[in-house]
Image (cartoon, one colour):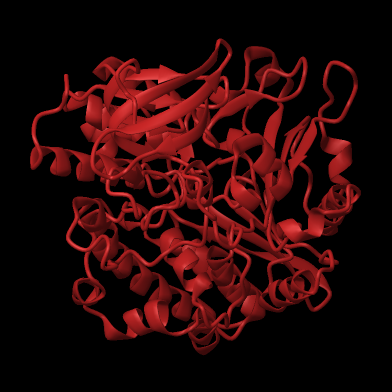
Length: 534
């Protein structure tokens, strides 16, 4: 490789999403010369805020919207000025019992109130008591597993010893999650509420023998040892802003509008990263390259076959409301119901039916979804006039809507109409009547399908985790065994190219964990192989 005329760095990071920024901040703070190359005109990837509707001063978290997995260790290490606010209401799930509208409210701050809601829904305390035992089990699992995510990757046996609960280990790591749900809970609605944590961004079902659902469930219940999903004050853009500020303050160089076109490495020396920018084409040289992009994208950049294409399975809808809609359930306060995760068409049988329909290539007749109002917990994303008008943001995240369903240009409209129809089923008034309008009089509503996420964010197949999530333990190959990258779960087949994004072993969600782990692997590796070039 002819690297004489190209600028040289200790580390070149491909992609300025939140994980790439975490890596950049750690490595620059350690004194390394770091370059971040981002294709888009701004950093943050999916962790961004935007004013999506003309004339409406509301900063929406356009893609990612809640935070659970970002370790306090990362926040502290990098000195991030960031507030994550807990939601008092964990969830509300509307239902109809004996022909009357009702619902299940889970109040994170009031167990007695939650117990009463279970009793009113099911008629006994059985499901509440089962819920309590299940939450205690997942709580222990979270406290034991989460700290390992920012440590060298344990082996399967080591993690099993850390869990120290054979029933929990078998339920989550060895047997399909549906078996545990069906053994533990009798009520269809309660079963569905539990299962939803296994389906976010993952096209699977309760009894999938691959345990894809179990892996998704694990990451959704262990965040910071509690499993809480918190509201980023200021929106997701505040998370990215804090991380970019930390990286820049430490001395990293961040270049936006730079699309990486290829990575060349022989594994024995410096790697070349070719990129295209407004002024033409250029090459940056790094002792190590961290890739904050999907493994399929990395394969393309290396000129290799990417293998089976990942497939996302969600519909993201962003709205601004003039007011919160009234609910059919007369006992439900919209300011509570919409503050937590509001489950729509997510009974256990409904989830199975929707998956079966989508797997057969049909749009689900009743798409399951979850909705949530950011402004009930954090009104700071609204400008003064929007606050005065009483506006609210509303996010809908639809499940079981895989990319394969969106080959027809009209499919997006059908999916959106079907999802909103399910919302209207539980409201006392049409959601459309509550939408704010932009400066041109258009309803404040936008939607993103998996193909659109691929076009806008470079996510292959629109897969929000870059590929299927992996259990957080080590399965080394002969090519990577014993390397620092393997010990930290960020290895590729190229020793000087590491993953630092959601496609790493402990990736997925807005966590910064793969960014932290890739940085640790680089520092460990370079410490054993000489001083950085600066």
